[in-house]
Amino acid sequence: MKKEKIELVEAVHKARARSTKLLEEQGISTLALILSKTLADVIENPEKIDALV
Image 1 (tube, helix red, strand yellow):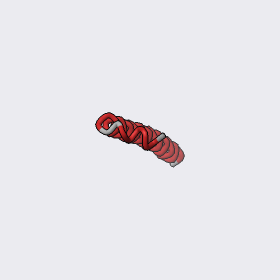
Image 2 (spheres, rainbow, N blue to C red):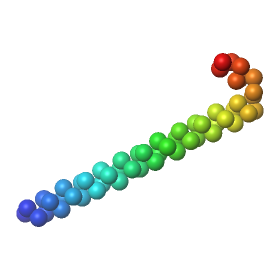
Image 3 (cartoon, rainbow, N blue to C red):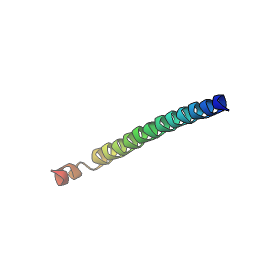
Image 4 (cartoon, rainbow, N blue to C red):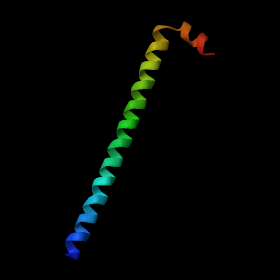
């Protein structure tokens, strides 16, 4: 029983680590998409730079 409990705890830790990594990767991807959209928007509409300043 104790060995099964340890294996379950290890599996939970591995799943949590994988989940955290995926969330971090999604966050980075989301930020990259936002940045690229903003840059494209500013390039297409340079007058928006003046509005930001």
